[in-house]
Length: 196
Picture 1 (cartoon, rainbow, N blue to C red):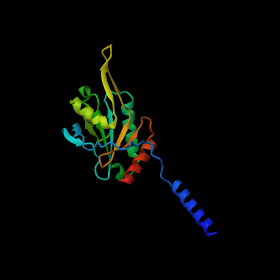
Picture 2 (cartoon, one colour):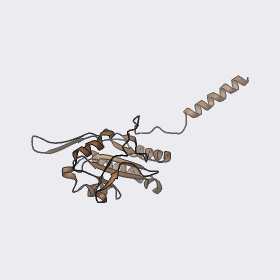
Picture 3 (tube, rainbow, N blue to C red):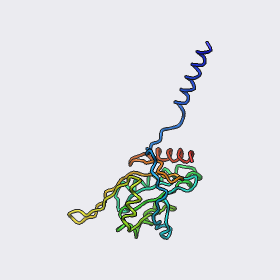
Picture 4 (tube, rainbow, N blue to C red):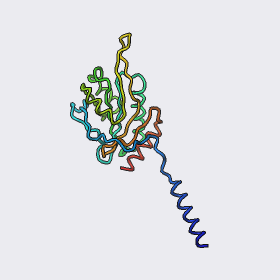
């Protein structure tokens, strides 16, 4: 009888652990998590000061690689992120920094600050005219981009549409695919902030 009760208790404990309330994150993690905190880019929103790709202590940093002439993916992603951050309480929202890195610096550098701050007053507008620095920063994120001219003379930009989350250890903690819902981004942000 004791063995039966002990077995029943063990099974209940196991079911409780498996059925915990921890939700599955909408974003995915890479293992091992790429270290990006040692990388830095000029922040045009702060007089070109170097900005390290690492969240402040106890916070997270959302990073997006895009361009200001983007007709769809970039404004949609930044708008969704803004709405998700607005769903957090003030303390949590204040722990979420946002940085956009331009993949089209030839056209973006003069207007990048206005573009980024139109979504986030406190956003970081990261841009450089050094192609090797941009490539070095993009590589560990897995961000790809290509700026090219069509036969008709139009400038086209192809780029990765993922949104990234960096933690205060400077590691790439989470990647959201384009189309992740605002609710899921907000819930992931809350969960990641609770873990810091």
